[in-house]
Length: 373
Figure (cartoon, rainbow, N blue to C red):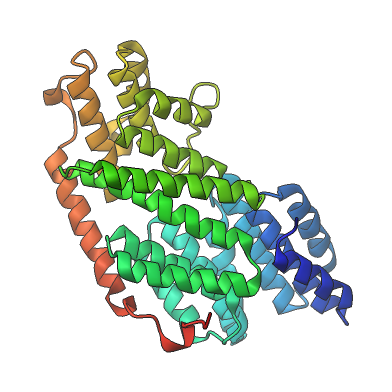
């Protein structure tokens, strides 16, 4: 069954009074299809729009096409070209002083910058979007609610995180966006898995009750994606299940999940969390007394690549390899590890504090974003 927003957009496309209006709506529809993994239909629509409006004669179509292409890139090749397309869309929108398009392009750019780990840029673009929001800019409100919900949860601020997620959820319902509701459920679950693993890396004990709650959220996220026919987040759901297996020390189950990322035995180099996942594979092999396989994976993880990871990924990778070395003395003596766990902890804590600093202005929800139920 199609999402409510697709039903609405199809009706609006049918009733459109001009070709320009129709093209803008088609671009909006194609963007949604790209987000749920209907890549072939999204590309077919994109090509038609490029053929008809590739001369740039309408700004609204051009910017929405760039947003569509950014979303396609994000879900197809992990955003290799997404930031570039959105930056161009933002420049055109700002040059034309078109508040509607500035709001939309900046909301999406903040989303991509967050996933690139550039949190300052994410917040800066979100501020530009917030400043120009109209009451019915649901698509932009969704992105902003998810962004601030995720960033608060990264810092462990669960109450404001939940408030921003609620903003995103209510906006998604108003827009008819089932994929965004699914993304919200997934983001919250995956970040809680991440939080459990970070807690372990920092030396904290993780209660079984907390693990059970997060496991239930992961199941809910998986069930919703299937019910809503969203295929684009499959790899992220698998990563969360693998991480949960590592948290529970269920290494056989974790390894079974991690194996789904491998292409010809290796995780693709352009996968954003490649080294974190490879470290988990090393740990699983070490725990299962498969030293040879663990060494083979470890050999594909040069210290030069690990050292430049973002602080959170760096901590997880270093901690996971330290665990592996402790479990399997044949793998690598702890004294020979080219990483320093205390330094990794310090880097991460400083990093988390910087994110918390960015979030101090966004603890409370602005009045105009408090969507009435």
